[in-house]
Length: 208
Image 1 (cartoon, one colour):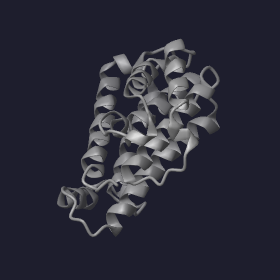
Image 2 (cartoon, helix red, strand yellow; image 1 turned 90 degrees about the horizontal axis):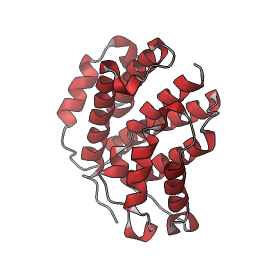
Image 3 (cartoon, one colour; image 1 turned 60 degrees about the vertical axis):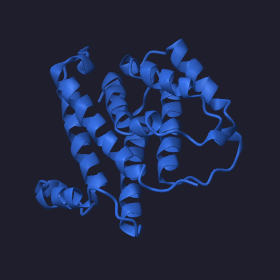
Image 4 (cartoon, one colour; image 1 turned 120 degrees about the horizontal axis):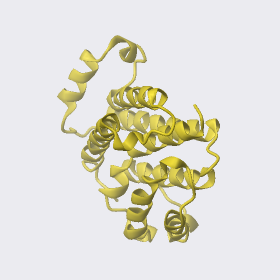
């Protein structure tokens, strides 16, 4: 991948963990400004070209001043997603204009690890989490190449969507605004659907 394609791959990975940031309230003691999160996500979506953006950087600077970053945090499942998503956006800020393969991999792998973390939490919890039958049915019917990994629902589903995004990013012509194309809109829809599934499960767990 060239730099532009790496930015697109990075963005789709972050899109898959966007809903826990936008749709789940953060602990009040973190002191995170919701308006800064809204600007971060909106302006970050416009950074597929990898160019610096003043409003985007200002939102990150405001986040960096939150009490969250000066205290010890013992996160639950939802907070873990929120912290890792914020951390990934901060990495994007450092990489604008020169996104390396390693930085892209860090963000993509982090999204995979979050999915696997949630699967592990689901496996260990004694709670009845809505949608269990649907998740089991998906794993029974998923394509063999994905089933071969032996992963849980969210890790498998993430890999499925990641693979489709990866193929489209590689196939797009140079300079194409993928997010504005029919394929791009379809991929954004898949990422958002997956992200909403995360929220539906994360919000069932009690929070301290």
